[in-house]
Length: 499
Image: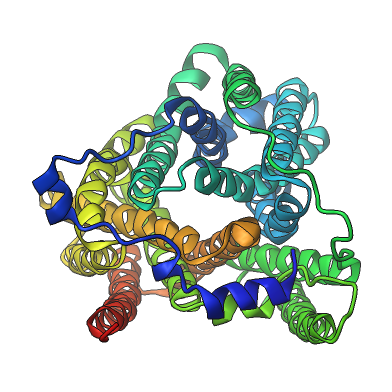
């Protein structure tokens, strides 16, 4: 992937003009139908993402059984949960770059293979050490398959309207997987023990591999004379993101002033700062005829609307997943719910993908992704304010609006932002672009969980910390709303320019 090619594509053919804009009124007048979705490839890609999102939450329910079965201590249990997300965040950029360089299908299949092998290792683990290693490997596999799946989604749905609908389905499957994790985990653990949560991955991954081999094209082979890789940038990127994600994960349990947390976050910031300088230098040498391509081309951030959309991804994950962490504790600690009952109580929020996907498809066909993004952020802002009156004995129906509004707002925004990201970037950079977006979301989630967890433990009562966190989540979504409205105004201003 050439950085200069990305920049040239951006200057010569902005994302809003790479495809002829469809006029819905004209299409309805002439009876045109939108292009059909490629369902078999979409199912394969959705199953891969389903596995990634399910394993974010399904393991949490199994932790008590894992502690008893393997004799795992507190530190080991924390790494069993957080090691997955740490490696996932840390290797996303590398996974995106590999997808763009060696092919999206090849990288997607490699990610599925690593994830499946790691799930098998987890299921067979006889002590905490192998289980932790297996969870780390699951995160590595997820980092390969997620950016590649978005690149394949773009390639298999070249029409913008069809691609928006495909992204909506893809995002809805992820939302359902994430929401179903506690319920599925509770049922599996109750019926077959904790190992069942890992055995479940094997048939799903096998089906995804079979569908991918049969229905997804292999893609073009790597170009001869392509620029060499960026090994130093890869090392800096992995070290920086792993250290930062690990430090933020540990901050929730150890506190922000822990020497380990400060060291990890400091190392992460230093490595990422050096990484940015190295990438700028490599891109500059590339314009002068250099033979190396940066892992993350800085020209990507000169693509209109890319950086604000990535920032929105960080804001929604910070607010929503930080509050989801606290609301889980709220139902369990303040209300005395069990794990399965808590999962069911959260379903109105975490399964909003079933509503957000068709809603986004209808809205995006008429307006594009940015107005639905702004609407989702505004709805989430109001929804978080619905948590302000929450107390230990607040009737559950009173909380339903907050649960539904925040879940629908977050999912609608995430689907719209994903569509906007892959619309804004050329196919040659789809892997890295989607990786950047997912890194921003992972970092936002880690910051939200650590920050809101600290507020809950340092406030005079848990509910006081919950209300303060809800106010901060509403502020994050409100800031995202302003960014999204600015993007809408930019789009409208370009549309009104005389041709």
